[in-house]
View: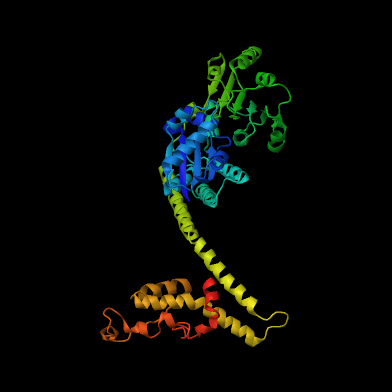
Length: 465
């Protein structure tokens, strides 16, 4: 398995390109797995300023994987323009590069606002969705979980998140308003809506109403202690001082005719609109209407404050530590197949020895002892043969190192003095190998344990085990 990442970022590709890819991502992870054997897992992260497709790939052919990802993006595009998707300038990363990027993203170091905390929540929800859709493999899930743990360390051990830095907070600060007493209309009920409510309350704004075309306004209002709009959106626009949108469903909810009608009914009162959605909730021309001030993500992007260099450096150190810890853990898991094979082999031997014990009556101590000795002999038979072979081939040091690594046994093996000077008539042969020949192991005692190897039972049966 290998990690691959395909991404679109506002700084590299612009918000328009990010918006286009975001519109094609619904159902993408499921499509990536269902239509090919190149992919074993996928997690898709789509935010206000990025789209990232994390893939656990089976193939070693990056060109085939790249073509597959682009084809499935095209399948989610209403226009279905496959050639244009094949030419799309996606940023790609592989292996450890993916981990470094993922951890930086989770810590808010790659965000429009450095240190923002919303991205960690979005990453957590992306993983939750992938698990629900059964597209998250162990490699993807463990990588994201470790990135989220590192993100929490960055939040607690640096001051990057201590001032509530986020896209929402930057957008609200740009308005330079006295928030107490302002009437705010919130359009949307997702994660950004919750973050917006928290940011407004932190500024002293308590008059907040939420509207949702999906019918989720009442539930959101109850859970966040705000009012739900009972009437039409048209009437709600007339009453509001500030409208904040964060729906991002791909179709503008605030059109020029709708807002123009509301402005005619407002009696000259100005209206401020903040569009936090990647897929615009507000038609750009709304900002050209008299009395309307429109702030969108592109404008917010140009007003992002600089983060402390020292705090960013500390955060990067935490990211490096988190990545290294994960790599060590993943390396350890590479041996899982070997551990499983070892466990299965021993279990099979135990089951075979148990089947040989008398049935229908208690087992005597002599019978139990005999069975245990036989099991022990079987367990060390192959290592014993391999020990002799290592000696024949002058690989004693390699074998002893392996014995110490696997069993923790430190054996003091000393070659008899002058043994290489004893000639046996066959150039290049070591007379030590004639002490116990591998061909006569059935009749001889094990050179390591002294156990009688004839106690292993039928030769053909043992070979089958």
